[in-house]
Length: 637
Image 1 (cartoon, one colour):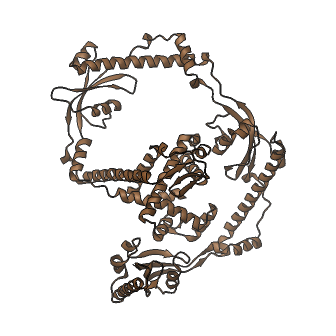
Image 2 (cartoon, helix red, strand yellow; image 1 turned 60 degrees about the horizontal axis):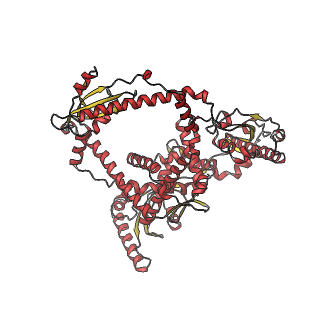
Image 3 (cartoon, helix red, strand yellow; image 1 turned 180 degrees about the horizontal axis):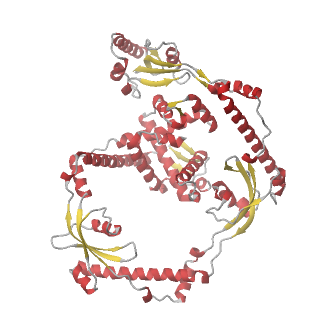
């Protein structure tokens, strides 16, 4: 759900700059942050802490996102690697730096921005409109209060505000656009000579060389450590529920949870804010006088929205004519709320004093409170009751299994017997996972933990999703061991042959390139080798008819002097080498790019310039704000 919210944040520019930032954050210099600490937090940015719980939640979310993108087939073991954990923590640290920067410069997410963002989440809508009842029920489903979810959402929005604003500051001139087009659309006249690969028959690898390589690289030829598990499964879907909700029970539940089925009265409001600049009476008096003057303008015939656009000091709503959207009780200042809910449709209030200053409020529309009847929600209540009973039974059965497993630490048979089940067994699997429960990251982590793998203990209950929990214990362990030399001899021989051939090919190409740079011609060398050079005039950077490595190398070469080609040697995708000559360079033709094309270039260059500014600002924040990481806690996660 939070992911759906993120995808709503601020459109194309936001996606471009935030996507680039996340890529950079993941790989840029995390080592500069690490200091050994022994604290309860995982990282500290200034005074702000990143807790182990927050990191674990983020790690799990990234894991689930990857599985969603890859249809559930991704290798989740990468999330157990230290480098992955460091990259994710680095991203969280940089996000926290932006939050600190927001606090420093007084940048906030307004209540209206928060409401609009949440209202735009499709999961919270019915027929394309925000539905408070759906919102509340979904929050219950994910076990969050409205305050918790809105606080998380506000924070998630907040760290994006400053990067997006900084990104918009990138400046680009027409000359910059011309220079970019000339470079982007540049073409080069090329000649290439593909060299014959050395013959594999020319390479002889002695057994002694194979044995030496095997001894020096034995770590490459180890079998993976393997385990298999005994496990007991508690499956909520398979439990027989002795519940048949009668109407009286459902009605009682309806009365108990009636507030859940009520959509409170909502009011569509606009406001004009006049800030009281200072806490003294004189400042409030001046603000009141200005608010009264604006009220007089509106009573004199000026449109409320126009007056708001020209005079309101609420930057979050000013540009929208003071629009605050649909409001319900409990979300605004009490004095503001009292007046708003006393107005009639079309009314405009007298000045209202709040902690921010004086407000003029216009009530534009009213949605009356709606309450779903028992008959409308009877089916939903029945499903909820069954689900509650299922959760209770899963918890009860899990408790029985745990108690039995703790009473006999040598087997899971008592646990299985306690819940009328049987002990199941997995196939052998490695740390990369296996089939069935062995694909679950939490099961993997427990299976290779010291308590299960080394001490042979029964595990705690592990939630594997879908109302299923398992208890596991080690059934079989196969430590990693060296593969016999005879089983890898030919594999090593092939590797050494390939390395020798690659070395010969490179040495030949380098020697020929040296001759070209000393004045010999490509045609002369081609004749000597009984080969023929091919020609490709007007080759662009994205030429599809040539090996991409050859094109890349050609465009890295300097502009050739008159009559003196520039040369390079290139390793091609198939393992062969080629010699490439650049005979001429032709600048891109600016006149062939229409206005739409120039606008696209302008946008690209502005984003690049803006991103550069964003990264420079972030680096300055890194230097200014103390960042600490409890390295031992991270590696133990």
